[in-house]
Length: 252
Image 1: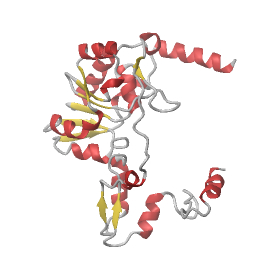
Image 2 (image 1 turned 180 degrees about the vertical axis):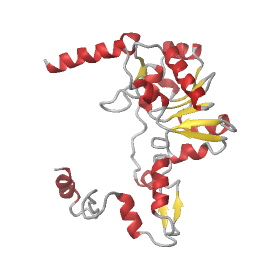
Image 3 (image 1 turned 60 degrees about the vertical axis):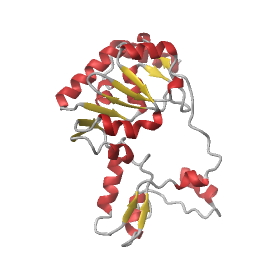
């Protein structure tokens, strides 16, 4: 039904609806591979394009002799009245709901980093950071998330976020735990310096090409599902009890 709706809304717009899985095309990469020719330039916004997807695209186009422009942001040039980034205040996700404190979660993460041989762990999924730091927000509709990145080391956590989103009480707690708040827009330039010569753990499926290239100064990478993602998949007693309460409430 979504294809039907999209076809109706795009009628006469100049845009052609490409149906993944139909007409022998699985996704946009198939289309590009079929139509790109030698010398063609392919534009990509590296800020939002995952490393894993870029690698797949490169592989698909191997031998095509195409050129990639990875800092291509045509949308911003056209969208003159584009809204600014969303803003909401962070709030504490208390032990009543989390069942495990920030210090304990950080210790578990750092233990996992040591076992993996990583000096730093780049977290680019807000949900991982929300879980790790026991905070929530409302930057996105219907998801209690804040727009942020984090680089976790053995001594400090560099949290890249609009500082105005962190209330004083939380900021004080962060300071006690070695969580340093840094400007959201400075993530690329800071991580390139901090991680120089060090090994970095990251998930290429959710790490943007821009962030990955900023880490070109690192000595090497451990690429896998993030450690917080694995840790949060195992629920503690408090979380299980809360899930049961929600299920009862939702089912009544």
